[in-house]
Structure formats: structure tokens, C-alpha cells
Image (cartoon, rainbow, N blue to C red; front, side, top):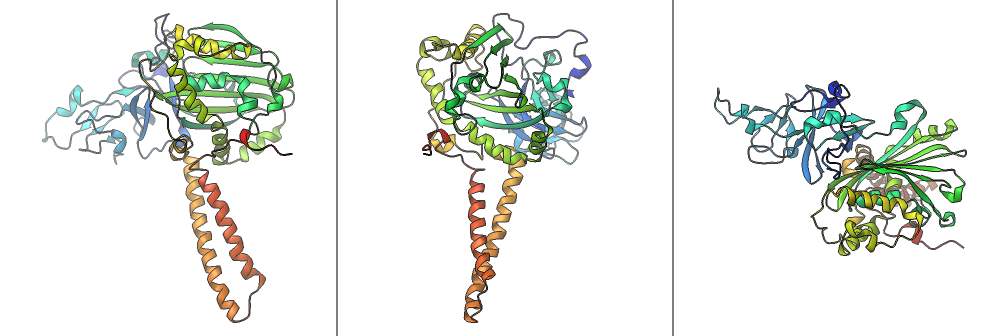
Length: 467
């Protein structure tokens, strides 16, 4: 379902007139605003309250329009006094209400009422009382927003995983997301670099012993992205060939089919928030040769998978934050060929990606400077970058905290009873076991709780090797 303010529904128009390529009509420039970007998994949005998000440096408010049964995206500023609408509420009649003076807005951005105006006044009908609305679309469980010219949105293709559309019932998909402390360009460059996996992710999803020459080939390239091929594929060629795709400006995937595991994909959307920050939507579709792995994946709680996913993201989170600052000091991405030394075909996709950015002037923040480096504590923060935005993790954290509190109460009571039993010279084994067990559970839940707030400082690759 697609929605757009003050224009016909995109689904009603799409392909009936013409189709536009993402990036605008200039053959020599990719306009990053003229494209669809995912901003949230639908499962993590709350229909009862507005949600704030920043896309390409512009603050947005996302809210559920009950009348149209669709998600809306507005500029996060009330036209009255510029108060952020994301701090407001969904009123009883389903409209978005400003927190400052109660102005209320319909799904098309028009103002429905101004409580302060006298009866019969029509100030709310002025164009100046309207909020800027951006087209939205729901696809494959994601909410997409189009920040460019609204009239173009119905004609620009939404970047989805085409393979999932072909045989949806045959796939099982793991999904995660996180706000990362580096650019969307840095994220895409990193994921396109398959050769880093055995080293950066050693002991998590990689192993140094699997490192080998990586010979990548770019098959075709243009303004809309490029296709790549790795004939040998990962793990020293034991899994089969790998196909890669970059769909401009923010989507890439690796596609691998092996006899051992079936078909697996690593899909990454890199949504630019602001300079030096992006939101990653990582999706891992599997089409297993056996039904058993899919069965166990479906049983795994979403929040539990997210804890492991965050561990993997943190394998390279710190050094990528610094890497892009070192690159900026050496002239930035436009000078990548001199700043980087890329002597092997393992860097073919990285080189092609940087060439694409430069050739089509596709840096979304070309004149903006990076901030000073963040502290390690900020770089490893999970609560603000993921947990508070994830419905599954928020609920799991609340449940863990409740259980931990209950266990603590039970532990205190069991310890308090011990002296009484000792006075009566009656200390059964169970009365000693209960406080010890509750203490152990309380500590274990505490460790689990911390994983929703902060990541580990030492990645697995840097831990001592077992002998």
C-alpha cells in the first residue's frame, strides 16, 4: 500500500503512465532525495503515538492515519511555532496534535483545527497552516519514505528483495536494525567488502583459517548501481559462487547458493540519517534445503536474535567510526584512490562503489564535516541505537527487569527466613538452595539486561586463542 499527500495514490498510477529511475533525470548526477528509503520495520511502529526519525538530515514525524489506514510522514515542525510534532500525540479523533497549542493535522498535512481562533474563523484553511507531507509505502515489512518531489514518488521503483517476491513461502528471514555512528557510504563500502569477514568477524560469523585470495569481478555498472560476481565464493570456495548487487543509493546484497545450506542472502539497506550516522536494516533470507533449520529459526525470539546481531555489528563499529574520519582528513571519498591502497581484486567492489559515488556526485552530505570522535561508551551504546526503537527488545527488557525484581524479592525473603530456621535448629537443604539459586538467577539476568544497554569492549577476534 502506498500513500501520498495531496496526490493520487501511487499504486493507482504506478506503471500506468511511465517509470522514473531513482536519482533524478540528470544522467551525470544521482540526486539522493529522489529515491525511496526504509525508515522502520512496521512491527516496531506504534499506532497510538508519533515516532521521530531523521532522514537525510531532515527531522520527520511518522504516525498512523486511522482514517486512511496508512502510515504518514510529515516534516517534524508545526507551522505555527515550529514545535516538533513528534512530541505531540494522536488525538481522540485520530489526528496528529501539536504539543504546544493543540493544532491538529489530517493525513494530507492539512490543518483541521486551531483551538485559539474564534468560531467562524478560517485561518486553519490557509496553506501556511499545512504541514509538509512525504509519500510513504509499505513493502516487505518495511515502511519506506520518499524525501524528493512528491509527484515523482509513484513512478520510482521501491527497492525490495525481488527473490522474496518470486517464492515468498519458501523463505525464512531474520531481520535486525541499528543506528550506526558512521555514514551510510561507509556502511555500504564495508558490506561490499567480503574479504574482511574472516578477520573482523573471527569467532562470530567468520574464521581466520578461511581467509584466501578473493577475486571479485564487476559485471556491469551504471547510475543505478552495479552487479558483481565472486566465482570461488567464501570459505575457500567450499560454499559456491556468490553474486552481489548494489542498487543505488542504499541497498546491496550478497546471494549465495550452496549444497550444504541452500540459498542464503545477506541484504543491507543503509538509510542516511545525517552526516556520520545511518540506520542499517540487515535482512538475512534463507531458503534451506531442509525444513528443520527454518523451523528452529522461527522458534527463536526476535529479541534474542537481535542481541547476537548487535554483537556482530560491534565487531567493526569502533574502527569504522575512526576510519571515515581518517579518510576525511586525507581528502574524503573523492580522493579515495590516493587515500586507500587497493592492490588486489578483493577491493574491486569497494573501488567500484567509490567510483560510483564520485562519478554521479552521490554523497548525500558533500559539504558537511564529521563531528569529533565519539567515546567508546557512546559507540557501544545499544539502548539509544536499537533497544528503545525495537518493540521486541523493549518488551523483553521490561520482562527481564520485572522477573529480576521478583527474583530479588524472593531471594531477600529466603535469606530472611534462614536465621529463624537456624534458631529452631531446622535448616533443610531446600532453604539453603533457594537463596543461592535466586542469587545466581539475579546475577544472570543482570548480565542479560546489560546486553540491551551496552556492547562488549573486546571483540571475539581479540580474545586469547585457546591452546
